Every structure is written in C-alpha cells, then in structure tokens.
Image (cartoon, rainbow over all chains, first blue to last red):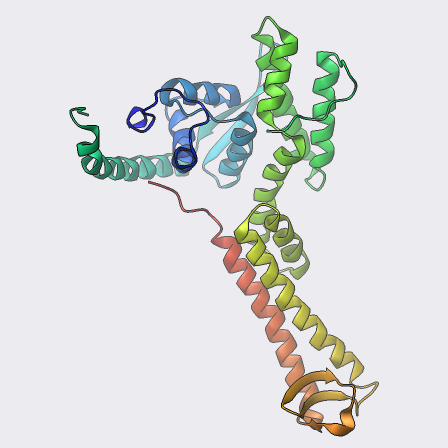
Amino acid sequence: MYSAINSNGNGDRGQHWEAQLRKGCLEMAILASLWQSRLYGLEVLRALSEKSQLEIAEGTLYPILSRLKSEGLLQSEWVEAEAGHPRKYYWLTPAGRRRAREMAEAWSEFSTNLSALVQPILGAKTR
Amino acid sequence: MTNPVSVSPEPSTATRIEAYLGALESALRGLSPDEKHDILLEIRSHITDSVAVSQDREAAAQRVLRLLGDPKELARRYKAERMLSRASRSFSPLLLLRTTWSWAKIGMKGAVAFLVALFGYSVALALTITLILKPIMPSRVGVWWGHGDLNVGMVDHPERMHELLGQWYVPVVVVLAFGFAVGTTHALRWLIQRRAPKQIY
C-alpha cells in the first residue's frame, strides 16, 4: 500500500497530502511495530523506516509513545543495557492489541476499497 | 525543525547535548518531577544510542538534535497531551482556562476552545462582580432598559432608564452567573474530550 502511495519511491519530505496520509497512519504503524516484540524508541523508529518507509522525526515519536501509554494502549519499563545507560522498552497492553487489530482491519478495508478506485490510474500495475 | 539552543561558537559534542537537555528540562516545567525525569532519561538515552553507532560523533549529535527539534516545541508536545487528558477529567475553571490557552497555541481547535472559555467565564465573572456591588450601591445596580438598550449591571445615567428586576436582581443573576460558569465548564470538557483528530483509515 505504501509503495503505491509513495510513487516517487523515496521517503523524504513529500508533499502536504502525503504528510496528511502519513499522519493518519502513524498511530497504527507504531502499534503495529510493537505487535510482535518489545521495542525501545530507537528500535520503533528503525522498524517504521525499514518496514514501511514511514520516516518520522524523533521529536514526533516520543510524545506519541507517551500519549499512547497514558491512554493505556502501551506499557513500558526501564531495562539496563550493556551500554551502561537504561532503555525504555514498550509493549502493547491487551487494550493496545485490540486497538491495533481494529485499526489494521479498518485500514485493510479502507485500502482495498481505495485500491479498486485507484486501479485505473495505475494502469497495468497489479496488487 | 529549527536549531536547538547553542551555547558558544564551537561547543564540544557533550556540551551541546547537555545544553539541549538543559533547555528541554526547563521547558518541561509544569510536569511532575517523576514525569520530567522519565522524559529526560529517555531522550538522553536516545541521543546516546544515536551518537554511539556513528564514527563522526559531532555530526551524529548535530543530526539527532536537529531531528528531535526545538526543545521548547518537544516539551510543548509532551505537555499538551498530558494537560489535555488531565483537564478532560477536571471541573476546575482555572485548569480548563490554562489548558485551553496552551491548546490554543497549537492549533485551531484549541483557539476555539480558549475563546469559549474566555467568553463564558468572563460573563460569569462580570455578573458575579455586579452581585457584589448590588448591596453596596443597590439603586445603581440592576437590569436597565432604555432607548432600545438593555444593560446588566451599572449604567451612566440610571435616571434616564428603567430598572426591570428590582429585588429579583440577586436571585436571577446568581442563577445566570452560575449557569454561565457551569455551562462553560461543560462545553470545555466536551470539546477537550472530543479533541482527537480524525484518523484517516
């Protein structure tokens, strides 16, 4: 889905409409990145940029993680790293897993419908 | 993102990082000490990790501080959400007023909420002031009608106008002031509880 939107291929600034699309997906992407593993902030950033081309600025990520935690969707704990400084790991709460599933289902339905609409524009490209 | 605080012409990497964290700490004023400590520890940890993987520490530090953005802006994002979720559970006009003022600095919805707060509470306050003045100047405070004008409180030329409520002034205005205060509080709580932007999916 993302590669269909990022038709210019690179993950940099993009245009205003592209930014709006990314913002809407952001919360879902963050929850999704935590679906299978506990991660700390930097790992979430890497997961987002590697798996989805969603480059989000670090100054945006941390307040959102904080908010998701205060909404009860995430839980966190500090873990001492070998490097000497502690890292804050996050994971999904049951409520977070429910929300992630709801979002993923809604997103899937939305993008299926939209793909059908957009198919003629993409011409021969199949999904 | 604008450049973070810089201390001197050629600060060392460590100095630059400490300056950033110092600016972030003072911008986080208002949060509880625990929350502040937690945020600063996480951001510091993030910076350390980002710089550690790189050969060029100086460039890596500059990059990560740029990506984190202006410390005041970062703090504002942290505070805004905490303030809003606290306010959504509160009935305190003072907290609601302060919260909508911070919210207004971020965007349109907050600005609207702040204007509602300002208007509603100002009217309640003004009416309450007239209630205090009524026993002091009973013949000058009232609901005045004259020359197609309706005024609540005091007017310049009461002799030219007609007072409508008489001894009913106090009970009626008490109800009005109370109504405005309570109504505004509920309107603000409603606006704050529905603050989530529409998600696209």
